[in-house]
Length: 96
Image (spheres, rainbow, N blue to C red):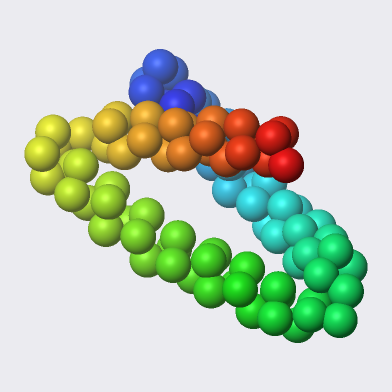
């Protein structure tokens, strides 16, 4: 996510989109069945919760990015915030 902040070339933006966005589809494809198996009989509820969380993220992300852009007139702070959120998610995942 932070790659475009450092690499101000089209290749940096493209690589960031592939590494971030391209892996998201795979992550969701793996995470949904894994959550269903882990939840057992409550699998449908777990999938519904995950879908809601993904949806909330899809709403909050652009709102936060727009707010950060309005303050700095650059998406650098939004990209760094996204990178920070991903690092936090990694830390939480490793603790679980």
